[in-house]
Image (cartoon, rainbow, N blue to C red; front, side, top):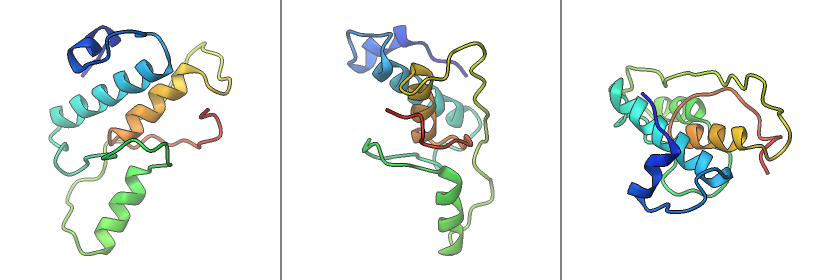
Length: 115
């Protein structure tokens, strides 16, 4: 699956396609497409409303399983490869990470670098 920020005007984001918010929205779109592609979109819906709070899809999976919910497939796990990007606090790559996690992907991370 893939998503590009140039697709965001279809969803109402008309300007600023290279900022932190656009990175978040693009990764959110990517996560939803990927989960739909592998058939997990109904099981792992991600965050309903963006609040900026920490969301861990695997912890959500464990909590739902403890409540007795029948879940046969684990969350889709991915790793963030930043390549040569400087990992400074507030970098757009962390906006993309937050968007993908809020979209329902299981990406191991800490919230230290989120602005």
